[in-house]
Image (tube, rainbow, N blue to C red; front, side, top):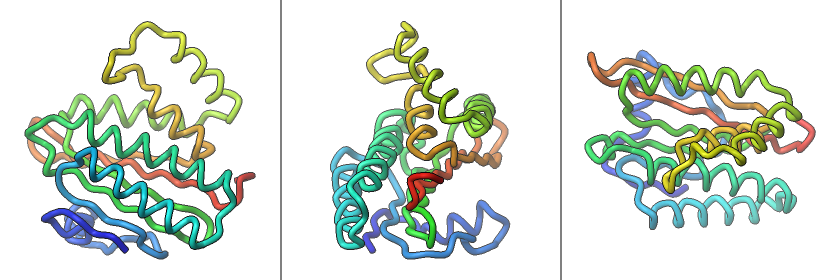
Length: 190
C-alpha cells in the first residue's frame, strides 16, 4: 500500500460519515491526502498499474482502471481551488468484484449541488446513452483548456459502466466536502 499526505484518510472518512469506519472491504492499494500535484498523479498511477499487473488483471481491465484513475486524479490536480488543495483525498481499494476509487475535496456549495445532480443523471444512463452523451460533449464548444464541459465525469461513468455515485456534506455556509465513488468492475460485463 502506498500512502501520502499529512492527514489520515481513515480519520477523514470517519468525520465525513458520522464516525463510521470505511464500509468498503478489500485491499487498499493507495491512499492520498493533501494537494494533488502532477508528480502525485504519476506516482499513484504507477502504484495502481503495478498492483494490477501483480494481480494479473486482463489488459482491458488495467486500461479501464488507468483511464478512470487518470481522469479522476488529474481533475483533483487541475480543478481544485488553491485554498482547498489540502482537502483533497483519494483512496483506491480492490474488492472482491471491483477496483473502488473514492476521491473527495472541498467545493463551493453551489458546485457540490451541480456535481451531485450531474453524477445522479450519469449513474442512471445506459452505456449507449453515456456514449451518445460523450459524443455530444466532444462536439461542444463549451470546453476550455481546463475542461469544464463535464467530459471527465462522462468518461469516468463510461469506463465504470455507470457505477458512479456522489455524496456531499456541508463544511460551513459556503462550502461542502464533495465525494465521488467510482467502481471499475473486475468483470467487464458488469
